[in-house]
Amino acid sequence: MISSVLVANRGEIACRVFRTCRELDIRTVAVYSDADENALHTRVADTAVRLPGATPTETYLRGELIVKAALTAGADAVHPGYGFLSENADFARAVLDAGLVWIGPPPEAIEAMASKTRAKELMAAAGVPLLAPLDPDAVTEADLPVLVKAASGGGGRGMRIVRELADLKGELEAASAEAQSAFGDGTVFVEPYVEHGRHVEVQIVADTHGTVWAYGTRDCSLQRRHQKVIEEAPAPALAPGVERRLHSAATAAARTITYAGAGTVEFLVSGDDVHFLEMNTRLQVEHPVTEAVFGVDLVALQLSVAEGAALDGDPPSPSGHAVEARLYAEDPAQNWAPQTGTLHRLSVPGIRLDTGYEDGDTIGVHYDAMLAKAVAYAPTRAEAIRRLAGALERATIHGPVTNRDLLVRSLRHAEFATARMDTAFYERHLADLTTAAPDPYAPLAAALADAHGRSRFGGWRNLPSQLQTKRYASAHGEHEVHYRHTREGLTADGVRVLSAAADLVVLEIDGVRRKFDVTRHDDRVYVNTTALTVLPRFPDPAAQQAPGSLLAPMPGTVARIADGLTTGSAVQAGDPLIWLEAMKMEHKITAPATGTLTALHATPGQQVEVGALLAVVQQEPPL
Image 1 (cartoon, rainbow, N blue to C red):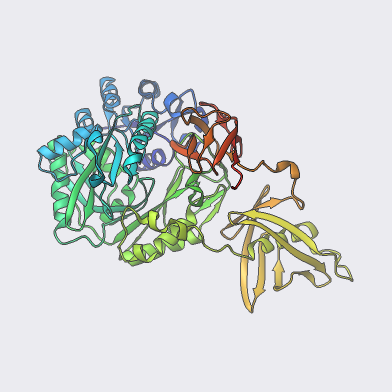
Image 2: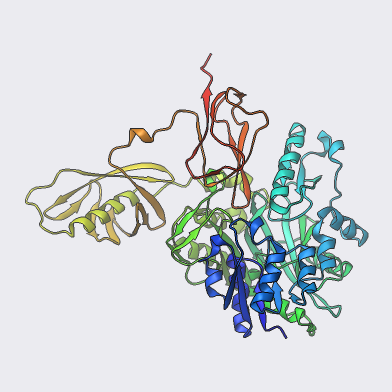
């Protein structure tokens, strides 16, 4: 029997595993980097062991340090979570060689699926339908579009869609560089890209006695940068017979590699066609939707299988529908740029919330930008979607910019509501989903709340005061609002101020009464779901940057610079010039115009803060 589990991971998944361990009276051990010294998973574990360093390569990817931590803390088992070393066969062997229980599949099964190219060979031999890889040197116009994909790892890293033959070489190099950075393996391959395909997967659990259970299906088609954003179970609107073929293929895949534990077999579904993509030999991020529909605890099943227990009878029957949305600290309108800073408040009441953060925690630059997973369950799909969208809309999220609004609009989009979505959903709809009109009265509410806090409505004047001005910035630009103190209280043109307090403003607008909840953290003001930054009354001329300045959109590390790029280089508008690495992803900084590079301040390996000046491009004068 397992008595103490070390989770070789961090954040949300570590907290998730600890929760089940506590319910089973199993002691918990965390490992943490210097950046995670005060992280939630470090705080909630019974015991925590420091891994010196801040970056993943210094800490959570150091298998030998983690095994040593487990032995030092007296753990008798290791759970890998997802990401990091969860699909590293050598790490699994090291855990077993140290006399510890590995809460995962046999190393040989991990190894068989670790390389996507090798996995495809095995699945083809087992009769599992798949897309055959293409020779990169032999790709023609007739083969387009194609998908460049990293042979190792996952999470959308090292993946590129190529629609123009001339772009193939550059995308192969970029995907390889990203894969090398993320997984230590730059091997990539090319396969056909199926337009309008759906990403459908099957959760399996297998024991060490030859039993394999398939737990329904999940649809994970809404993705950004090949990373899942919204997932649901069961997968809706599958063609007749497709679910049966998916279960058969997933079970065959597990039996082929003598699998044990929890795993997921992923497929691309297009109409009646089913194509094997890969097998994730670990727990998936989206496992809660399966837990909700089947009424099981997949982490508890992992522990049970690791202890040698057999799966009894048949898997439970599914009931109802569950939808999960991944809440990220990122700005979808700015090329999904990750955000950092203090998370002052995170509350999504009424539904399941799996998170690795609490109020006041800091979101740093070293790790994935996911804040939480919000999960809603209901008897029907429509009810689950409505419940999740409503919970997110009412959520209190104070801190860095998030994708909350995008999630709400995605859930309410007609294509998603009618199950007509596919993996290109955001390619078609991102612009519309990120250009919603701002609330025009949020800045006024912020100003009135601030005015109340300063005056407390004391000592009314007999005559109206001078017009007061406040300036704010939001994701939609800058806003200037005006109000007055009068003997009747605060007034503003075009609205009736019914009441104004530091945390609540009530306005009557065109005969409609509206409430505005107001919270302030330093120079940030949150009015309902609108985030505002307080600006000085008059702009600071010294803060202006020269035209053509390339500023870091996020804190991160300069990963690389375009070959041959130096001061004086001629550049074309849209040319990638600098790559920043932040939160395990690479982000391109492109030339804003055609012209000449007049300054280059970035160097590979350099740490930069948001807004740092990286380079300057002087635009060519018009002819």
